[in-house]
Amino acid sequence: MRTLLFLLIFFGWLIYYAFTAVYTGLSGVDEPARQLLLAAFTGIGLCALISPLVYRRLSDNGWPSALVKYTVHTLIAVFLGQLLMAAVMFIGDLWIGVKAVFTGLHTAWAAPASAENTAISRSPFVGQFAMLSGGLLFLSLLYGVSRRYRYQVRTVRIPVDGLPEAFHGLRIVQLSDIHSGSFDNPNAVRRGVDKAMSLAPDLILFSGDLVNNRADEFKPYLTIFAHLRAPMGVYSVLGNHDYGDYVRWPSSAAKQENLHRLMQYQRQAGWRLLLNESATLHKDGDTLTLLGVENWSGRAAFSRYGSLEQALSGTPSDRPAILLSHDPSHWTAEVVGRHPQIVLTLSGHTHGMQFGIESRWFKWSPVQYFYKQWAGLYQQGRQFLYVNRGFGFLGYLGRLGMPPEITLLELVRAQ
Image (cartoon, rainbow, N blue to C red; front, top):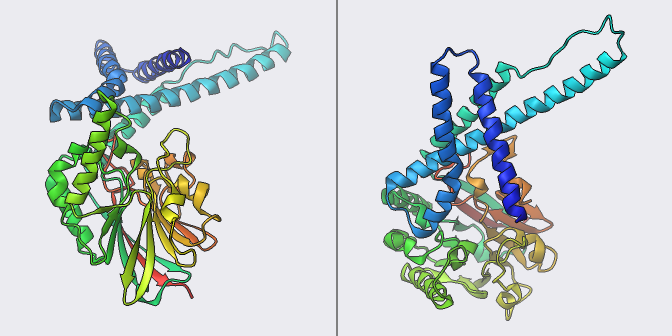
């Protein structure tokens, strides 16, 4: 009941301020053009308001057509544009309120003869600025759709204490968050896989979220990803979306069967799935431990199927280990300081929120307010964490300032 009340208040606020922004911003437009524009905005805006609900229903049950899929996602972009418009207009009203308070205090202290009539009203400029802000966000989100298959290779060199000599220079390709249920261009996906293979990796590691919800989402792309091959193998773990937790299944048996099928698809692709277990990598007489845990999150909203203790069972504590764990919050919760032999943890999950700004001097995404480690390389003491920004996309059918990532990690002996 409390959630419903909050949603009603939120949508009421959004409708009022988004419409007020357009109404105020168009105050200089002659009639009847102004009325037609207001009517058009109202109609599109109301459709945009229900688009998140439509998305939730169709994304769970399957899109009936590409037209419906892209229409709903376009309306969601309109919805986000409306949200920004409403926020700008609301801030403008707060400023008006502050000015009104100071004007009232001034008038109360001024002599009646000197008091002035200083009525404060909304400025058309604020409305126009709100419309411009919302429109730019809408167009930017549409532009991001065209960037969703522009795979970017990020090369990272990591100095590892105690790295066996034979593994000096080890080339690891990390992929994460494929989300095959969102794909609609097999040729573009194939180009991404080919780009990963062109890096000549010694080892390929996938850090979870192969699908959005259902195992069969991966089936049309199985042969494409089966081209991933490396001399030391291809290893994977499960992410939170791989368990089917976000779908209403007819029975628990149906849910388990879906998970079993997803595991089977990975085996058919030639990947070794690590389920709270370890594997030993061999090269020229030296060995390196690889650990893989099921999804384990430090945030209560996500599942905890993993067991790091189980994965570590039987592994030597004096040998450096690489850990595959989908959620980066696992690193600070259970790895750092507790298990110093885990020199490198590879995660994903955040996608960099598929939206942000990254440059040599500045790095920002809304996801940083939820995850301390959300993209790139992090270090604490002699332990490293790398968070991959994701190969695919989910929800928003695009990537704006946060391109899909193929990571090339080169391990070297620490000096």
